[in-house]
Length: 182
Image (cartoon, rainbow, N blue to C red; front, side, top):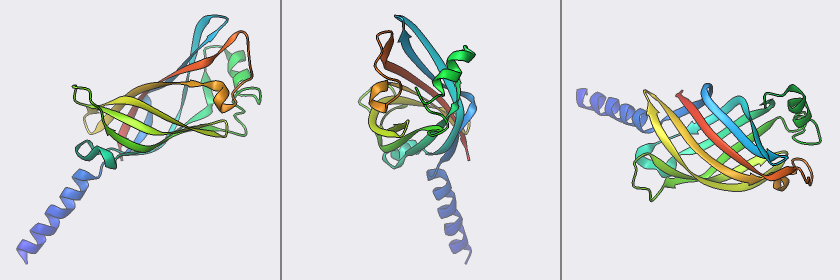
């Protein structure tokens, strides 16, 4: 009986150690974008992170990411611009209140440095879902993880804004997401 109890305890402990669930946190995270406007690089940040992350560094292919950010939190350090970006002309924050990134596959990279992985998945913005892929790092922070990566998109692919002679179509997005163990 004692052996059965010990085996059961080991099984529960093993499952807990393998199954690592996290929640993205605004504090300690940064979702940043950069775009050229009149030839000058400008940018902003988004917050309101929500979602679920399962990250298992010992079996990376079973990891999953499903994280969103609130469009209503756009902050470019210019209140008039922020208000304009939330309108139907650009992000239409009332109709499309979140931007979501969701993994379809996570695997190791061929980088020699430990802690580097490759994300393949989708980005949903302004009601449009497109595939994305990029390398990212995962750094343990106590019982939490800091995930850092970035990618580039064409804003027109997502129907954000129209053709413009002064606003670039290319948007660089950098992610630094602190995920708290849940």
